[in-house]
Length: 151
Image 1 (cartoon, rainbow, N blue to C red):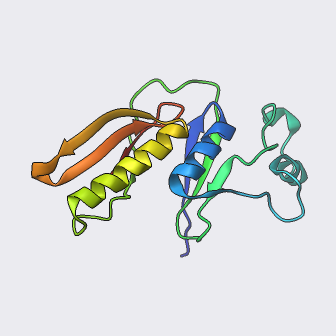
Image 2 (tube, helix red, strand yellow):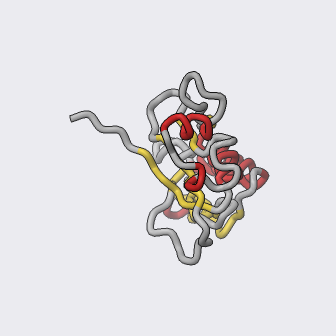
Image 3 (cartoon, helix red, strand yellow):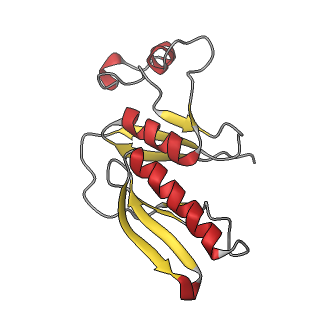
């Protein structure tokens, strides 16, 4: 049996999340299926009632994809309620290169990614700087408060 995986993230502002997570993951906004100018046009052609589409839904991409085709599709589903508790899952953005890479090199890679993502709208929660354990990492939040780590 063949299977693909999609990660669905509830959010209040899909456009903002698409922009941030495309930057964070190196993904691209998913274009609408062939022959359709927008996702809204595609959904209308599929018979989704207009009443089920929030204002602006589908006018811009609400999902991102790995341009290399390896990672899962990520869909940002607009929901009315805000995030109220800690995530039960999170992304680990492994940019350091692993334990075979010298700690000073991993540290610089993590710092560069943290700086880039902070400029894109993330917030640094804490830095884990533990050279005795060979660790340098950052706990961060995306623009809607979802936690993730950069290691």
